[in-house]
Image (cartoon, rainbow, N blue to C red; front, side, top):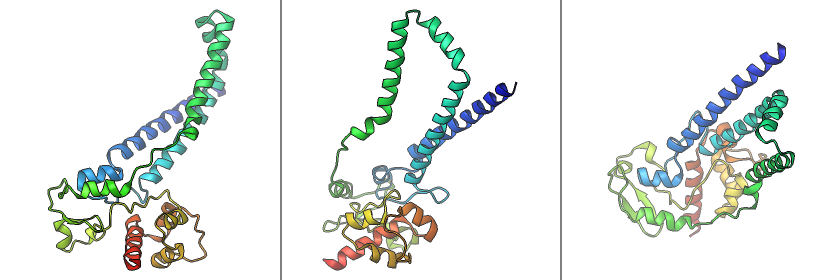
Length: 239
């Protein structure tokens, strides 16, 4: 009886975690858009987050939920192991075929887990991508855009009306900071001293450069657009 109750609890938790996985997946797919989707929909790379977590934070949560679901699945199989074996034996009568099918299933499952390690990502040119968007001249919301071809800048009419929320729209699209980056990665990528970024964001110099920006953001209350603005201003001053 205790085993049956424990199995029911595991099944209920599995259902909740599975629904959470789907929910976070839909959140990242339709709400917290990618940079390219923001350019296509709004004509600029705005910053979206939910409860202080940006798209990359929610991707990490999605990964953790996946690990939890896998652990629960292992327990579920363990509790039903004898039943699974009996069904498997009745389904495949030949012993050699059973063994081969079992090894094939395990091998395919492992391949799905490890194949990302061996894949080389296709690297694109963010500057050209941003220039392509900016050359359209208009955002999808119908606002007229003003193009600065030297810096690939896109402004909307609302910015000239003094809206505070649009104060980062002059940042070139080739400067793209993500919460999954560390401070050191962002500083190295855009050739800006990490200490300079820290001082502008009021982050203590004692904080490690290997801290992820998403975590620092929640602690010190800045946005990814703030970092992009710091980088852009530093680059302009160095020109």
